[in-house]
Image (cartoon, rainbow, N blue to C red; front, side, top):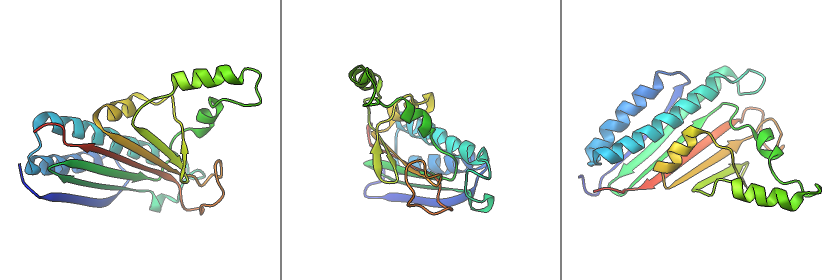
Length: 191
């Protein structure tokens, strides 16, 4: 293991599937260099592969009227690794999460069965290490996909910051801001 060393990676890529193996190969070399054991490397690689693949997919599938202009739909990837911690951020310019669906499952206080909805919502909600923010405001999230569940099982914290240009949530962003800022962190687990 390398003592008191830190590796920092930062790059932006045009959205495309070729960035996944490029970043993963680089990350694999860096984790090995710092001295992470195989089991930990596998967990980090799987989490990063899933998050980058999701970022590429939502960016490539974004319709022109929903997203930033094609020339500005880059994916930015940053990570730092040291002997104690892994920290990564992936920024994409896709449509992100389906917040209409999320809001439709949030308890409605004007409803007759509001208290039952609260109990159901609290019972069904993901009680985990996940934080979701939309334009800085925290939002409870449930009904997540398998990929995010995999990432949550390997990371200590996951934060999703959604940048909303559609004015579903807020009107205080510009026309060219949209996408997701996805951050994941974990402390070193194995020596």
